Image (cartoon, rainbow, N blue to C red; front, top):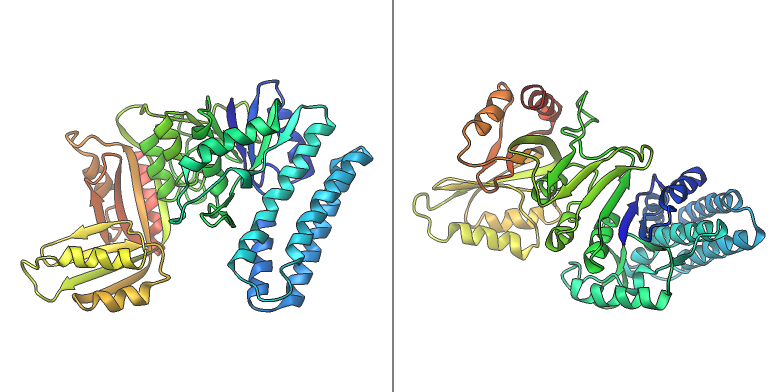
Length: 437
């Protein structure tokens, strides 16, 4: 059985929902993962923000606007009164849940529950569309089987048996529909896999049921060799290895959630990126096999902060690195890039929530400099270490562009450079012109 995931744009209108139905309903058994309709999660985030700020009038206005949108969708989506009634019931249930959090103190449990309603609505509505058109379809509630542990990581030991139980309880069907993004945490509360987590859901499910293939359907033909928002004439990449795709996703290629690749890689399940608007295109295939040596693509990750620490003890500062990394571990702040010398270390982070605390602790060990508004530009491919010239090509292409940091050698699949965000577009264009033409 294949696992197919469709994003918010793919199910963002009545027309798109019907197009997805025609796309998947080919008689081959599938498990389909859906995001919330486009715009819904942003609206739900706004509602939660208003409730945190105790601005209930603004929250009620946003709730009413969103509910009217879905009432309009239901009227257009179904032909029969029976299915209109079922669609209206699903919408009403979701908004009753949302409204239940508008009284009393608002907390994180309320926020996570509100955010879950987008996926719960989209899957309920889509399941009814499939049924109205005569397809043997079952709704598979993700909250019954998707689990994260106390560290907020996917709990595959729990997911695998739970999804098999859910499939058995649902009974035979040609098409199973479930929610992306949402899950339950170690305490059994409604939680989520963070924004873009529907991709991750699909990969976790694919690994849990030993799927034939996981397909991620979006509004682009697959991975491109550079960011088409900033660089003209980019080209689709036909095939990538799991490692190459993971590097591209982590370092800014928005088409795929960064964590998606790992579950599929561990189970050796192919992942294919497809375009809902152009289903005949082959997309990008991701497997264990690389498509040859060399540079494949460039990606950029914004919102980076660089921190440089120069040791007070200067040379031979025993334990210096250990002490620094323990600070980041204590404040649960992941590190992207590291560059070291005998007396100094430069580190980049993308989560600045605890930046002030981190800097205060780092000052116990050395002088600290902080540079914000930085961008990591990552050159990805199968870059074999003894193959001469890859690094030189990158640096020659960037002649005239100031480089803040360089990371090379930690992986055979990427060369990363840190530049000021104001130089991002020039960097992407230069690399495209010199390396990908």
